[in-house]
Length: 67
Image 1 (cartoon, rainbow, N blue to C red):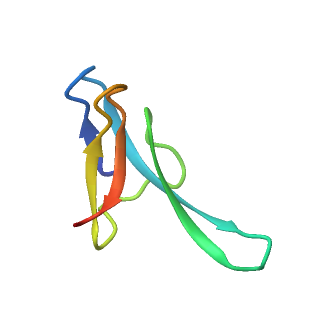
Image 2: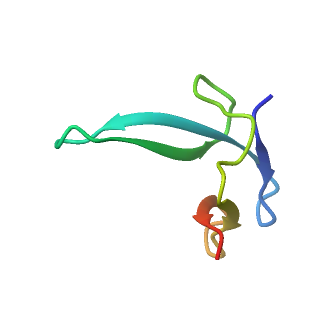
Image 3: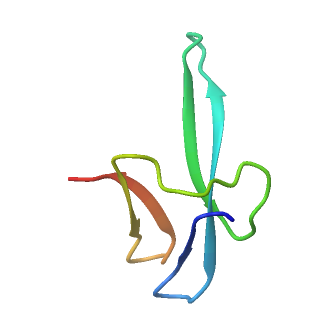
């Protein structure tokens, strides 16, 4: 089951996904994003050291490092 967040502004449910991206220098990074449906790449838990925040203007969820 994918990690889900409900937007306070719109009431929509978003599912957390992750994918690996290779950069030009050969380094590989993990990109995290929220989608409206749980598809391939959906993950079950938040990454360590990260928290969910909601953009006040758009109501979209985002990940950020814990302060």
